[in-house]
Length: 462
Image (spheres, rainbow, N blue to C red):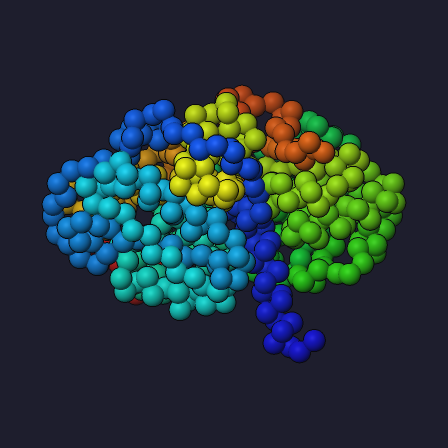
């Protein structure tokens, strides 16, 4: 294989697993089918879940400027869709703007979603949004650490669906509403591993492994996960790094897991890679106590790929406080989201990333509605005042006033032959377990970029 093709293949694999590996943890493959028939939500036109009058008409006034006219607001959506062919983010943008505009828009201004395709490798070039859009909303790009400097240099605020690379996690001018999973200074999913290694499977703590696709991008994410495991008393007895593009034969990895007596392991890779490894383990009749499939596996594709292994192995995923999609009928906000997709994007899946994107759109809209004189600074200031943001009930509360905070609430899903289901993790606050302990990462982890890094200050942000 020619070096250039090999490089592109490696980057492509990173894009497929980055969401599951990142501390943002979003899934690019999770899906739940929309209802067969479109059902009109019963709430008032501009209400979403517990949020009242998110969108409504009015006589918009105040200054116009980049991305703002008297009649509309244009916001950018960066997506890797040209490469991944996964339309989650454009779909979420279409659904939200259609619904919001039908309810009257933002104080009478219509929302226009300006989708910028990164093609995966062109994230910096896609930041042409800097020259024409008001803000970035519901965006996510696998190589977001490469374009954050351009975003900050042009003072572009973002309300992302997810962040991936360390440079962009908690970067300046960012209001990230998702509950997945923690600020950049904290080890991820401490409560999750407490349940796995101290409550559900205490015999596994001294026999833990980690299997991951090796790359400079995943390296700090894997390092943070090791801190989490150690903090919960886990002993790392096996570390299996594989080429980021995968391997043709997983037998050596499965044999190493068996020979070292591994009872639980964390996997960082694509759902196809995990399913292949599990099939080898299952055919060897080697059963582990648990496998952390990560949030990348939460969805129908993994259920279909894993097949018979689901009856033999215990696969878990920590959602970090996102209400389970398969339980949508029990949660008005999640059910309303599914209904809106059935109406405005029939046949398109509601995924974990879609939920996160919808939370971002809702945050932007409610913050913008609060600004009588619409400006980037006003919307951003309104957004980061929110100390218990739930996206109307889509997720556990998040404190946007303190973005670099430990994960407080989480929930755990288990993959079964019948689909994903909540695991018996002992929730103490509705579907979530809240009050997780906080563990700070040691020195040496890459920090997020700030305005100071690009020679800018908040006084320049208008």
